[in-house]
Amino acid sequence: MENQKEMKLKYDKTIWKELILYFKSFKRDFLILCFFMIGLASIDITFPLLTQYAIDHFVEPRNLDGLGMVGVFYGLLATGLALIVFLFIRRAGKIEMGLLYKMRKDSFEKLQKLSFSYYDKNAIGWMIARTTSDASKISETIAWGVVDLVWGLTMMFGIAVVMLISNWKLALVTLVTVPLLAVISVFFEKKMLVSFRNVRKINSKITGLFNDGIVGARTTKTLVREELNREEFGEVTFDMKKTSVRAGVLSAGYLPLALFISAIGMALTLYFGSIYLAGSLITYGKLVLFITYARMFFDPVLELARIYTEMISAQAAAERVMSLINEKEEIVESESVLNKYGDHYHQKKENWEAIHGDVTFEHIDFYYKEGEYILKDFNLEVKKGQTVALVGETGSGKSTIVNLACRFYEPTGGKILIDGVDYKERSQNWLHANIGYVLQSPHLFSGTIKENIRYGKLDATEAEIIEAAKTVNAHDFISKLEKGYDTEVGEGGGMLSTGEKQLISFARAIISKPRLFFLDEATSSIDTETESKIQHAIDKVLENRTSFIVAHRLSTIRNADLILVIEKGQIIEKGNHHELMARKGHYYELYSNQFIEEGEQAILNKQDVTSEKNPNGKKEGLMTA
Image (cartoon, rainbow, N blue to C red; front, top):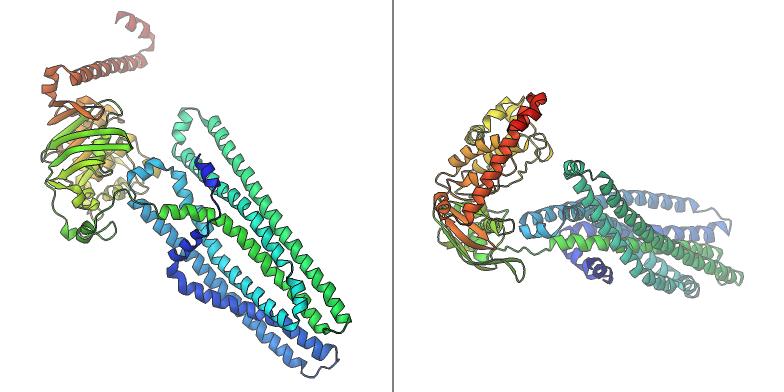
């Protein structure tokens, strides 16, 4: 449906106006480039006039007196031509790289500011395509399109003026095909725009599939999806091939047609020019001038036709890049907050208050899709230093509560207070700088272990890094590595085990000594030995800190001050572990079932180990058991 809507859009000239305003900082460079191109076109127009002068004054009369000066003037013009070509290529290249730099920089900055909801709705490939291939297409088309556009228009205008002054009747004969070319251009316009939009759209899908194939390589192999992935990729690339060929056919049909029309114009000029020459209405030199100008006039016409197709192709890319750059942020700071606390890139940390740790949810409503509430009139009061555990079925709203508390999303109704103040009255940066957050699936950046821990506090000393690692029981395994803290973690931490990555992510989260701590099922994807290490670390880390734990393994939250059982966005039970177990309600049932499952799994694991040690006794052992 989205694709159909996009294909119905008409050629939108306003996008180019928007781009002109967006690139206004390059105004001076564009003006200089235009000056070079006007000079280049003027020199190109002057050459045929010199040729006419030479023919009429030296060739036809067979008189060579003064011809040398014409040659000198030719040489000067050629030198000027070479200099201008050098200058405009250098300037156009500078503009192209400058435009590309600005678009990619602004796109990346926008991606840093956008809320989590934007990443929920848009695929990675979609975003990568906009900041890479789409941005390159726009910068190339604009920088070099201006070159050809200004040169072409100057050439056409200058040639038309000179021809009309020289012989207006023959000039009209030469220019008679221009309206026909305009009609052809309008005809091809919509068809090419639709095709090029489709090409850019499918290109995003291909980028996304490449990303999924690389990031999910391990999952692909474990699920034996190689053949299915190949078929899916083959279908999309085949669509890309068909759409690109269709777009290429339209371009291939338009340019030769324009060339054919220009050839008609040249033929008419030659035919009627010969008649005028035979009737002594023009000189031989003027006939050569008109024939030369007829060819030269349609060269820029063909260039403009090519630019036109390029602009149509680039418009599809421009719409996509500008839609990202102009994307509205869902979480927007008020003017008073910006003035006091600063924005993402100009932080006024001297005005940031210390966080004590009281967190209050007052009548919170929240939905991702309007009308489909995840939380409805949710209330919760957490005191400084309390540890709150959230348990419940998948989709009950546990992670949503944590995301709202972190202000990754904002409530659609009600208020969240930090130390008694609505957190919207303070900046996101202030809050995020005071929280530690550990996810179920840890993400490490390419670089060393030391660099990854330091991401939590960019000015951290080596002693602080080691202290953080020791706090979460990561120092021992790091020290055993050949390069220690200077060990490369690989892409996404791929050189380390899941447990090791999780320990490093814990160290990164606590190095800044945050006042609020959030664990979103942080121990559910690691082995029991590593979990034991992390559990000891958690007890240290959470001491005197307000913390929220989304728990999968209920054995890890027995020491929590408050346990909330969440169902459909509502608190159905709350209390500490002993209180909830004594009630024998929903939490008791969850805990008991999980305890039994873990016990059974432990027995099975023990039997597997025994069987490996004594394979011949496997049957006997099981029968005895």
